[in-house]
Every structure is written in structure tokens, then in C-alpha cells.
Amino acid sequence: MPTGPKRVAVLGSAERNLKILREALGISVSARDTVVHLRGERTPVTIARRVLERLNEAAEDTKTLTRQQVMDLISEESITEDKRGRVGGNDAFDDPTMTAAPLEDWDGRLAVFSAGRPVKPKTINQQAYIEAIRDHDLVFCVGPAGTGKTYLAVAAAVHLLKTDRCRKLILVRPAVEAGEKLGFLPGDLQAKVNPYLRPLLDGLHDMMDFGTIQRFMASDVIEVVPLAYMRGRTLNHAVIILDEAQNTTKGQMKMFLTRLGHGSKMIVTGDTTQIDLPDPRESGLIDAVRRLNRTNGVGFSQLTKTDVVRHPIVQRIIEAYGEDDDTPDLDLQDGELAEGKDL
Image (cartoon, rainbow, N blue to C red; front, top):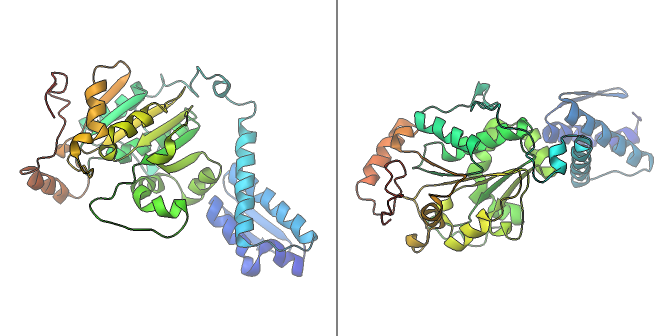
């Protein structure tokens, strides 16, 4: 570690660069005299060490990097480390007909934790939902607010990512306003769509630390994208979650479902009592469930008000509004869909 002005160039003013490394990678970083101490998991520590080496090289050339340039260095090294970790790794990634790792040994329990406690289904229907995700490459889950549709889907995806059964997690949502006109939102693309995608990110932040999420997003392991940007893609070895699917059109749903690639899983969640489309009959979720209910390899799960795991009053709110709700609903458990009931 250099001294004087070069030390400031490496560490940043008031050790700003160390703070950036700490927040972005989720590690402990401290500097004393001419030594920087890094503590944490091997991969983020390796990335931090390489970033510091490049900062030192820049200091030797009397260059002082901006905050954005330091963030760019972290992103570049994260991508490099991610690629380096896959070289000579699982052969499944080289064969499009194979999945990343077998699912036979997954008993339905999730290797995912929130606030130090394991994330797990709390009701029989939620357990059946997780089992459907385990056993099928495409799963539809329909249910009211607060039943854990999105949260459990994200938990299952994080489990598959952590256990090397997939190599990407893609979170998707249609950008449909819930009755309000939000107008032109400021910022870049990510800033504009962030309000729509926030519920997916909230679940993700419960189960993974901020530094890991930032690192995975920088290295393209985790994507959070609006539905409109899925066109033309083929997604292999990924878990793709479509949230708020009741607000997709029939055409959008067909476009999304046909993105499924080798070794991937799709989870489609929605609440047919909260359709924000101008014409609820155009809901792609209702149409897809009708069309695919007899298709092999497609799983269906229905959660009800008895599966609500939010504040107890949420269940009573659902019951109160359900009395006069004329929005089309699906009843998968009673077999009415298979009998061709009009929705």
C-alpha cells in the first residue's frame, strides 16, 4: 500500500473506496498503515483484492478514480470472477439438454434464510406449491394477496441458485399501473421500472445480503426486468418468475411462456381478483390457465384466503371485499376449470 497522495488515490477521500467495497460486496474492509484487511466469503474478498490492485495501478499512474469508476471496476471483476468460477465447472452448462444439477435429492425444504430463520411453507397449500415448483418446469400459482405466492417463488429460486441447480435468476413483472397515472418517472430505465419491480426486490433482500445481490446483479446472475424486455430471448439454465401475471395480455403471456429454454423453470404468479387491465377478459393469466390445464409438465397451485400469512386483518379484508367482487376467479382445486367452466 503506497503512502501520501497515492494512498488517498487508492483508498479514496475519507476512505470512500473502502466503503464502496464494503457495501457492494458485503465484506469487512479496514486499513491500517500500509495494510488493508479484507474479511468475508472467498469470492467477494477475491474481487475486492483485485479491485484494490487495480486502484493501486491507477495510483502509480497518478490517476484518481471517481466513485462510478470504482463501481465499474467492481462490476468488471465480479463478471470476470463469475466466468472464472464456471470454467471447468458443471458440465451441465455445456450441454443444453442437461440441467445444472439433479433435482431428485430436493425434498422440498429450502436452503434459504430470512433474519436468521429458515424460509419454509406455513400451510398445506404452500407446501404443495413448493412441491409443484420442484416437480414441474412451468408452474402457475393463483391466489389472493398475502398468501406468499411471490415470496415462496423467490425463495425457491434463491434455493435453486444457491444449490447450483440454475445459474440465473430472472424476476419479471408487467409495468401496469393500478388505476393511478404515474406520468413520466425520472431517471434511467432501472429507476423508471423500479416501482413496479419493488415487491420482487423486497423478497430478494429478505433472503440475500445487499452486497451479494449487488454483485449478482452486476455479473448478470440476477436480472430484474419489465415484461416488455423479454421479447426475443431464450432463457437457459435459469429460474424465471413472472409476478402480477393477471395484468399481462394474452399476447404478452404467450411471448413470455415461449422464452423457456433448456434446464430452466418458470413460475407464474397472479391474483385474478386484482386485474388492472382495461378489459379483465383479456388477462393472459386466465387465458393461459384455461389453455394449459391439461398440458403435461405444467403444474398448477391455488392458494386461498386460509393461506394468508400477512397481518391477520388481511384475511378479513379479503373476505370483506370478496363479497361483492365480480372479477373473474379461478378454482383449480374443485376441478371446475377442467370441466370448462366460464370465467
